[in-house]
Length: 364
Image (cartoon, rainbow, N blue to C red):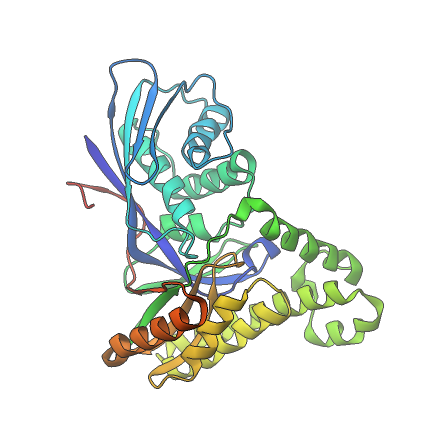
């Protein structure tokens, strides 16, 4: 059996900007989805997931099931339709240590791991660009989640020791050094699960698009803060709020890139705090539990800043913490959260990673 892995990703800043033609600053992380692949004894595709169980499908006749299986079958579907790939019988074994529903993009890591495994094992000669674009297309068209390109892009293109500054319009990108020094990234998972295909995420996407129409522009690149203020009385309250988040978040991404180049993690924390406030109030994608974790973290010594991450409606909080205090910070948040909500929060220290790749041996 041959093994391939794809990393999850942490988005430092630039939330809900990727599908709005904005800027993002993700980093591939050292949590992975692994796919083991070999030929099967018949013409079918046999998939075995450590977390979700087993299923078998015929690659000549693929239809969506509205379940986790679609993230796997969607890759086969898009390769068949767009690249004319005829698949032999295959066995896939999937393992993952990317926390699910935590805003670390376990779904994109699964898609990228599958397409990377098929690309390597079947010698499809796909480019990096094809791998992330086809993975996104599978999620948009087969799974039915209108995600932007960031997650798949980061999973393919990640580089250890760097964040990725990406312009989602031109697809130009820059590797930004991550010299964290005495700080580290800690992800606190609220345990509140969300399914992005339930509609909240797609609804925000529609609202952000409608805001552009109300402002009379084709892109958020054409909207400045002063134009937002000038036209406030001419647009609906929802359109104003959604646009305000996207425009200010794009500015925060650019500011964060500059801050990272100077390795100023105290200053980066301030920008993260501003981002959370905008996500909670203007874009309205946070929830009580996540807000509680953010408010708790802000009061703890050793935390320079924090914000919700991921699609929203649950999930996790990213905190920039002093390495020496991670243990006590995590313990205090968990204790207060459990007391308030009777739920267990989980804390993960994450580091940067390279993008999807072939492994000599199983990693997980």
